[in-house]
Length: 443
Image: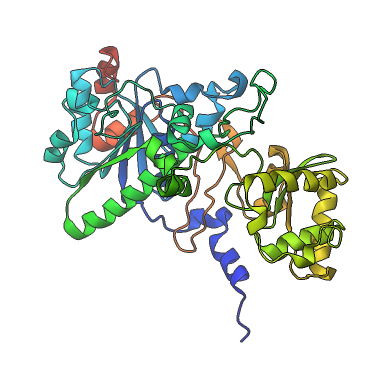
């Protein structure tokens, strides 16, 4: 019997379009999502929900501010585009924690919860009488996960600085070294673009949310072994800063501060974006032979003496990179990005150093990414036929599991959409009880 190839075997088992036919890894886990105005907290619980956890988003009656975060104010049926995705798979209830009665209701919900995620200012939950020390008496197995700008302790932990993604990008130290170089003798007035540059998406919040979701999974495993919950603490600024490991080692070693290097990379040559006839393309040649292959590909192998190069060392210093970048960019401007890509492919087949070839990758627009056949085949942008918002594109989980695949079941839901279902299921509250609570401003 002929053995099936691994790609074929994987395709049959982890296609997102058949995920609904399989088990969910966390289908017995309940999560109370108290994250407030926090993409990090929302992202964390979105990841857990993809694995099947029953996530109950607890909002104030006016709704989370994240619902209003949307490009140019565009709304879809009253919903911001960001939260259409980040509210996915969650049940939505309202509870005004400013009210003492609401805090008692939360305690009753905690009795039946496995995980609680909160992003309030440090000390807020304790001031309300619903901090970890109180809640663990109610539910010793509770995993209490806190995400904040600077963590639960430390000199800055109780600062009033909000957990805005751009602030945390800046506080991490990474943005200091991200952006265009200001040439010597030039001023910011002359080159206003030569300043630190933020990442477009909320990357520091996503980092914190991802790390906390991993910590929650570890805590759940520990609870299975030891029978007890614990408190988890993740600082958004620390989460993003952890991506910049060599910068701290470099400073510790000889006091060097990693400065902005624009399009180039202090840790490798050739690794940059290069101008082309039609825009920009990425070039990768981090090994000597790949750099030589690129030089050969553009017809400069003999002129630049590539055969005599013994290492990348001479190309790595800042001045050398700037010099060689000017030479390389003068050549790449002669082609469009697709021409360079095709040249790289052909060189890998027939070039002097084949099968070694440089990496060339065109920079695509969101539209081109959306239409990418590879992503389409893997089901990344499968349309969700949502009962509230209709057919909407919500990015599916980017990881595949053959037996318990993650999945997107629905998009966001309106504020308080699941009050009736969740309060009845968890606390046996009927319509009359909910009506009274709503009139009192509790839900």
